[in-house]
Image 1 (spheres, rainbow over the protein chains, first blue to last red):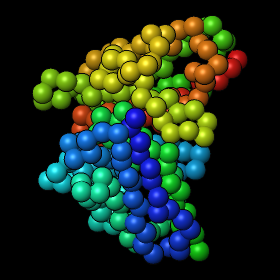
Image 2 (cartoon, one colour):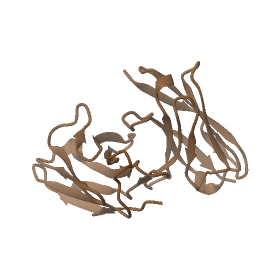
Image 3 (cartoon, each protein chain N blue to C red):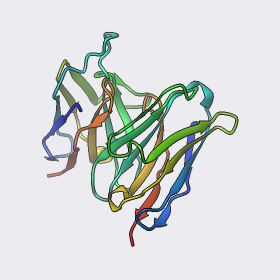
Image 4 (cartoon, rainbow over the protein chains, first blue to last red):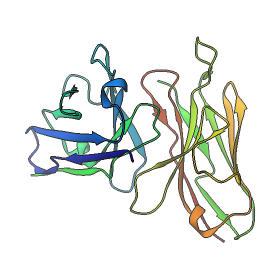
Length: 114
Length: 112
């Protein structure tokens, strides 16, 4: 059974940093690209980043480019999202998803507020 | 960026009835490899989105045949026949042909 479990969320102040993790199981993690997608409270879905299976390519939404970094450790079956210079508009539920969008985690909440 | 215009915003339906959701893209979603990367998701209250249809018309594993997707180029449709209570929620289209990937704004399927 495919499982994606996010962690690392919380309440932080504007300008601060946070690092999210997503632990994968039930599939060969090192063979698949992975996404981060977010959803602000009572809003729609926003794709924010993709990393290839071997980290050779990374793509970002303009809204996070230069502030967020997607990475992975295939030896630990773990995907990361390092978030810097956080803003109130980054407040959202953050989901990791397997390439192809067929499996998503349950999400982790990030709240940026003073 | 590709803008995905999804309509309607809200869709009241009766149980057992039919629903149709439209998604139009600001540019063609045909990839250089010939595939069209347009997908449909359902997000039930308090849950993560779940994949219903991938690449326009392919039902994901376990998705009932009441769900069907169609379209080409810039114009796509999700149809739900014989609506059941578990079909209620927010529906989103997603294009993954062009970076950045973009979602439609969503359609809330609710009881009439």
